[in-house]
View 1 (cartoon, helix red, strand yellow):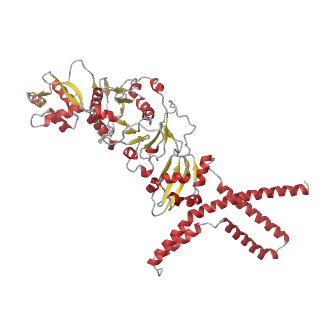
View 2: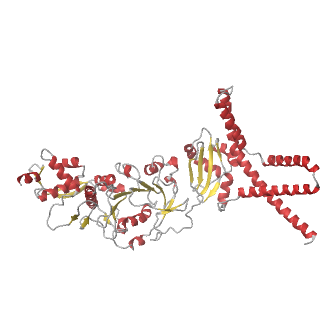
View 3: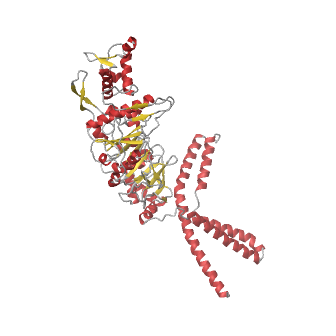
Length: 595
């Protein structure tokens, strides 16, 4: 290689290095400017604290003043010099060193010193480049680039006062798979709740579109809030159609993880009309009806969703059917609890007595239509009379005690308000809440908890349909895109035998005798081990005088329907006799004495 080629090569390298250094010089300048804008208020606060400490302790004899002085020194150290000042100080230091050292050394040492300086500058440029490198691998869109620029502390500081946000200052924004995340420093007049109420002012300052989801919650330390702009989703590009291989409920839009809800929980699924409750619940209904030890019962007075599952589930679609199936479920629950082995907390599902998931679709309709249902019953004299029965006491009893018997209640409603869409006795028993878009923050608080908004659970801001928040005590308030399970897929699922107590089944609990239930042709009494029958019989036997049937509900804690069935079983079998005035007396003691 000739001297000319060597010179040209060195010149090209020098030009490239100069351009590279200039680019990183500009980046370092911007970084220092942002840090100064963010940390200079901390110095101001530290100076105020020191002034207060000096007023309290003029002599400096207590630790209050010493601590304030130390915090001020720390705050000053954290504020970097402007780039021009940093470069000037560096050049001056090098000049002084060269003036002192170079005149006393040879030309060769001077050349090697120059090489060392160039290497140091190059190493500094590389360090800056590595520091500024985007390790996320995400490239901002045009919208995100504009938002990132407006979230810079300098831009925020210049426009915050005129937008009513004086006293707030952003940190350094960063782009994530869930969108843009930025910390916001708050002075003494601001809180995260107050900043959330000023969302419109923030949107105007950033020039963000109206449909862009914005989440504001308390920061990791006091005096800070965290602002998240949901410009993208980690679920983008994923196939959300449900298949037997993709059996999760949905995909976390922040982490991209598969989200599942295990069986055995009491669920509340809420959302306004059109939010996608039915679609969101289908993967869960499949899990609840799949397997030899799982059974599904659906209460659906609208007869839309339940009809899709009637080949795999027991479906009640009229008020009378609702009352009957709830009576069966309550009797089954009490019977399981009565024969639950000592020392065992929960029932172990078997093929004969499986885990039963009871789904109430549109609870507000059930609360209204299944409250007072006319039902014909036969009296002791053989006459038929009409009485009103309600399914609500039985559903409330299942919500309170069903978990130990592996009978779980799932409540679905469009009206997530206590008393209108959710019974007061059922709401406190809910373990997991799945909330799709609701109309008001008040409804979101009923479903997700009173602290929902303060912790970022803003269900009233969710898009529709198909996006939900799931609060189970473990998850963060990250939206979940639920999977889509088509109606034709549900209809094509294999048939399952619906659960019913009239079907003969055998149960053998650990440490308990085998219990066989058989539907006989003769109207014989139910087995004495039936939980409801046993409780009613015990109440009649322990009474000092004949008992009125209406008082048995209070004495046993059972619903009126369960008491009526138990009394009919006992009187038919001759274990209990009814007097002329309608009061009940047990005959078992007299017969035993005679024997």
